[in-house]
Length: 178
Image: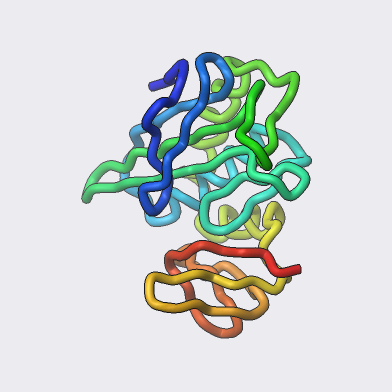
């Protein structure tokens, strides 16, 4: 499903995501439940956008260090909905946009790459995420509901958790410190 505009979109932690008519790729994909759906979706979206786009754990697409898009995965026992939003002709203050990218061709590319990475071997998906990561190797602070974890983002675990200073973080907001 593709939307022309987003007036009441929802990101992680019930954050709002809005986009004026025709300004973004706003798509949802219903897929079979997959333990690495968020990781595979990140890889697919970054590859569809092109080489300058990098991944920030857990669900952001970055262009020159600024957010150009995001991914939200919600699942049930048998199905997952992968929501992807990518700024094309407009971006909120401080964010980035993919100028010159045609929405329908980006959607086609994203759909093909999403199916490819969801069908791929888990280690290949994780390795490609590592290659596209803007988070790994950096000093980060992960904001948690009841505190924070700070340290170097060392790796992504086999379940998609971020390993920070020896601690596995399964959900939280990452702030790049350097």
